[in-house]
Length: 327
Image (cartoon, rainbow, N blue to C red):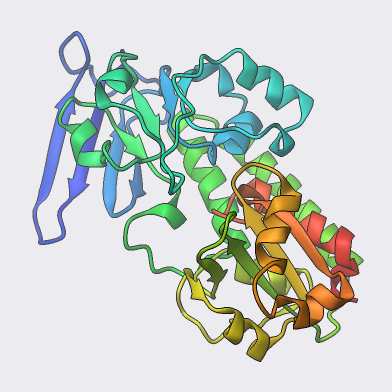
């Protein structure tokens, strides 16, 4: 396994530098070839790679479209979690199908259930995606670096935008030594965005993005700290929760009726989209919502909106196609 150095900037003032190599001494910084060592900042930590990772374990699906665009999916040796096939084109599905699935077991709140021993046994030189029992510090203790999508970093407060997608593509390009491929991918994504936005014109209609709980219970809404906000704006809508600075929060049917959006986008993790829509429409009083009465309700898999990835552009495209860019 190639040597990887982790430099974690502490919240105080000190910087802890960890240098290690699995199964051997620390490699010379020139061992990784031109462009290495490469340092990226992730969730307030600096992570330095002496060479491009070759044994990657995925604990979340968000990185998949980036890795596919960069041509490095062959570096992924194992994956865990759920990878709905609707997200991917045929080429990406073929890449995923050849990667062993460690587990897709989730707890009732949708969090991945996997032991650190299972992950460590894969001898990864990079883990993508943080889960509850596998923090950056836990993996750093055994000299395994972790990268998380910036929007999913604990305590993240930055307001997301489509520019975050381009920046993250460049970050992965730096890590894997694929800067040229990253720039080409960014150019292609920017071209797609220009085409999508040209297809729709703002009309002043309002919208909200919700996450209903199937089987009853809490309904969540998304504010300006979520990718749902710039996605709605790019589609030509005004987010009725544009005064809420949180990412996601509980919302009552009374508040929904008070804001009464023209359009509703319902996010879900897996299962039957019809059940997702029913989880909202079966709430007492939901039939009085303008979007429900007009039939302007659509369901969308979660990663088509959050976190910011190329899939968010796919999701924007779907919203514009469904509602005509708010027109």
